[in-house]
Length: 77
Image (cartoon, rainbow, N blue to C red):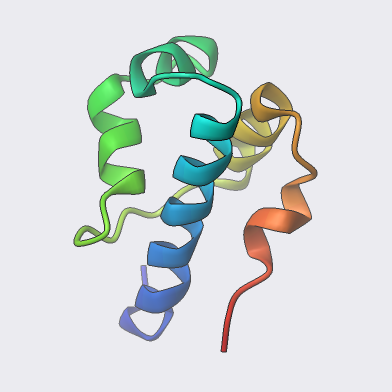
């Protein structure tokens, strides 16, 4: 992960957290549905940790949360 994208990865994690909570899922439940560990989801969503996410994983999360994947990639300036 390139340091110039730190802000984008942090925003991505916050959006995943927002939509996960909107769907009433815990980190554990989301992790199980996308075959990842709860720790992995926790790292993605943490506001102080930059965790890279593959497109496959992002698409899996979008599918489970019933959110178009592009919504996760609309970043604030």
